[in-house]
Length: 289
Image (cartoon, helix red, strand yellow):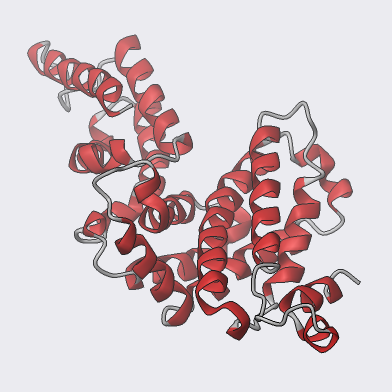
């Protein structure tokens, strides 16, 4: 992906130089089909691609591009302004050094106030947080032990799991009685909703499966169950003809994996009647009533 993106970034740079050579004011305000096409492709990548290796490689180039949006002709400038919202988390100093979760969690909490507008910076922050939590799955240079540390930090000290569950709860409330909002799921709102929910669920799956596995019978928290079930039901209402249908099914699979994690914590004498009644599995089933 990042090597392919380089082609379009080079073309953008070439068009800017061409604008200067032709004496266009503001060095690139001349209309160029090539420039518009390249910006459109870059914008599509920023909005839709979950793997962030391209972002790590071209962080400074992309930031410079959107920060100088006023140097381009109006239609391109407008597209860059919208892209700048997605790239706003990159303004956090050394964000890809992954030394601290605090700026990311704070950014998520701030963005939640505008959740109904589906802010791009919230979506990108969630993707970055997901990359921290499970980056080792696609990047061999990212150590798994580092991911495990971030999971523990997110659950225990940063109030991160509760914040992520709040996102899902707000979305479920926003689409209360989802069949009434059926027509929205195939439109822009539905697309942005899925882009917000997918990384959130991916992070929560990693957090809960790891924490339950490590704490075993000492894990007693079932507060997430109701919110997860609401989200599962919401995903079930995405029409099969929608472009987001595949992602909705992926979200449901991730939720099932979280629920299955609740069945794994068993004491040595797990089959004793008293232990069955007190088990995390039994408590979870109680939430289905």
